[in-house]
Length: 120
Image 1 (cartoon, rainbow, N blue to C red):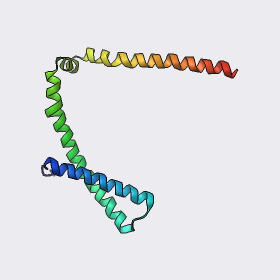
Image 2 (tube, rainbow, N blue to C red):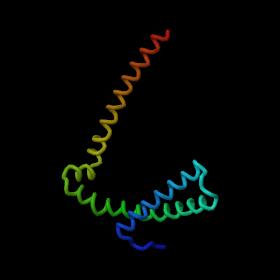
Image 3 (cartoon, rainbow, N blue to C red):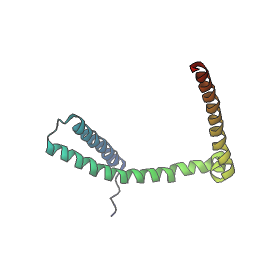
Image 4 (spheres, rainbow, N blue to C red):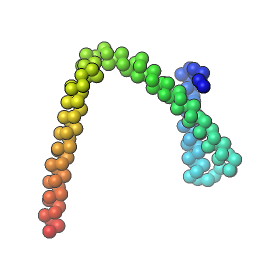
């Protein structure tokens, strides 16, 4: 089953209505101010809107990645090299993480060591 292609205005309206119905459902659960029938209608509308908007959101994200992000990555020499070179990507992401973990460990041991001396 394929949903029809919606224009951007209708998709934004769908996303807004989804958020509205979800908020109404949460308010219904928390405050218990709505009648039982209205609560059921809010839950049903929230579920249907969430299902349909998830489909269109996935399509939007795929379009953004495929048609906007990937060409910009290809146009930038550094970003293109980073996506193609596994070794460069590994070093660029591993070194800052490892450095941050080492700094955290040094300060953590220093603070814990200081606390254990004071407790004794």
